Amino acid sequence: MQLSMPLQYAGDPQTIIAEAVALEKAGLDAVWVAEAYGFDSPTLLGYLAARTERLRIGAGILNVYSRTPALLAQTAAGLDAVSGGRALLGLGASGPQVIEGWHGMPYDRPLARTRDVVEICRRAWRREVVDHAGKTVRVPLAPGLGTELGKPLKMLTRPVRESIPVYLAALGEKNVELAAELAEGWLPLFFLPERAKETWGAAIAEGRKRRPAELGELQIVAGGTLAIGEDREALRDLARPQLALYVGGMGSKGKNFYNDLVSRYGFEKEARLIQDLYLSGRKKEAEAAVPDELIDLTNLVGPEGFVRERVAAYREAGVTMLNVTPIGSDPAALIEKVRSWL
Image 1: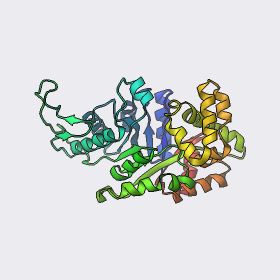
Image 2 (image 1 turned 180 degrees about the horizontal axis):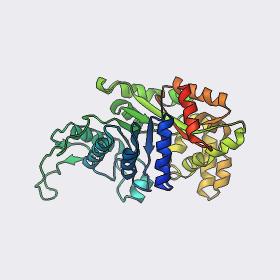
Image 3 (image 1 turned 180 degrees about the vertical axis):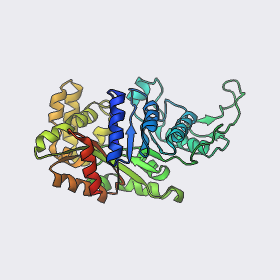
């Protein structure tokens, strides 16, 4: 099992980069840089490439709408070049609140859009002439649109690798099925090891039926907040804000993927309450409503023996890269400790 962490959305970039450099020395294998509607991800990834030596650098995630498929391919190839072949391309559909509310683009056919993007990226990295007529993307532009002067092209520069690993962020059954079919890896958030099989097992099995052999085994990147200590309630409180934000505030009533997921785990009543409180502005009450059991099972917080048990549970559930957010006075020591268990 490998070890990765997501970098912060915000903060002083110099501090964030310095932390990544220290954690690389402590044994971290990869970092993931989110984007959402904050700073763009590739700028920080390029800076990371220059400051690190072996750390793999992953976009976690770039959405499949706001950049053209060709630009996503160029960006990933550029990051792979400046990092010496260490790039990971994390992709996802995001959600209508970001795609329509921030980017001003329709949130349309996310599965088909993701498939088109991945297929075009891979053709571009192989330096094939890209002539693609997909369900959501047509390259070159279809006759009758534009100047009609466009022609099929291949990437001008030669990528370091013909195949850059693609990781799909997915939670819904069809999205997870697509990841198991199409991607090198899968990025689920709030992964609950003991309920993974019943939640996603059928979708993964269906996707694997169509999975090309050259992709190898599906890599699974999952984890949560990492904090070790005896005061379990204080440590749980470290994980409450994120769960409350995502379950309660990411999306709207009837269109919140994380709320749906927690409900599928068996916390339907609690998920509804968290959302009601959060959307009414009662954020602290929403945090308090997050069940201890949900925190314990989707994070790595507690006494050392308990955290080691959680690491084993993730491994047993098929996780190949443990993705943790270390919290404490010495994050490097936490990474070193967990590294020694792997």
